[in-house]
Image 1 (tube, rainbow, N blue to C red):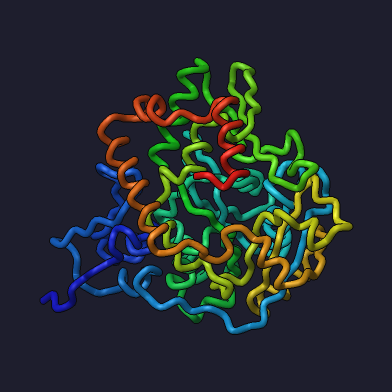
Image 2: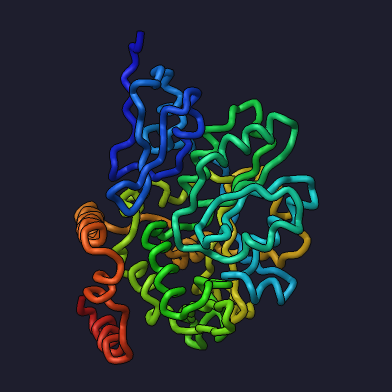
Length: 397
């Protein structure tokens, strides 16, 4: 007899991590995006045995377990200029992954699959790490990955998991405490995840417009340097096609990136993220170190610099032994002021307004489709961008 009521996170709080689906012993939970821009768990109550495992692993309905360790703050960058140039910021993520591979870790990171969908996958050699390089501003599919990691750990292996804070919390809840010493976690400071459905439609539209298959895509290109001489971000998008066409434009000219910046296609849970706080759940935290030149004026930030935070002894010991990075201790308070998206600074009213805006966009998108939304919400033109910058300087919204 089923005597336990299964209640997972409400829609506005569900992070879509899929840990509930992975842990269900009867496979009664499926992730579905039917009628929505994101996937949410759907329970088959006919086969559900009410064991409650899904509720125990859900990061959104359980109390966060944050470290009490005195965090250590660093500025860091890859010593290999080629690796640094082709990475999003300082190239620390790829250095961590290679260091882990050299120590017999498997690495779980995010890559594009053959259809340019964004997925988490498990790499068991350094040769398989290239696809993990670079930020991907789309919610990754993690369906099946937590169970795969757990099985790998049970077999005596070690895993470095790299993902968003909510994904890190999910894998930590999924893996039993008896195996936790074999798991090293690294989170990125996240500004929110964007809709995989919109991304797929965007890719399809690019290929149709250019009459060719997309070959490479970089959400953040350093073709013009990581930052401007003023110190502000130099955000560009770069992609290529099989027919040889190359596109390299400012991010404001890119439709997907523009919608990202407007938070139109942001997952609702991201607008009131409970992980956006100083004390972190992951062993290591990495981020763009915009403004790093103000903390370390002698550093060459034009090529990209990462901020690294070690939140426990495991993370600190690992990062200090990574040979291929320059690692410099930095002032904690100054650094925290520079880290965008590190702590929540929006009011509840602002958070709710952001969620409502995204929900309205979702409803209209589902009803009318990608092309209609592009016409209604086009990316900036040179003139509109100029007006936007003037308004920002004058404090006008």
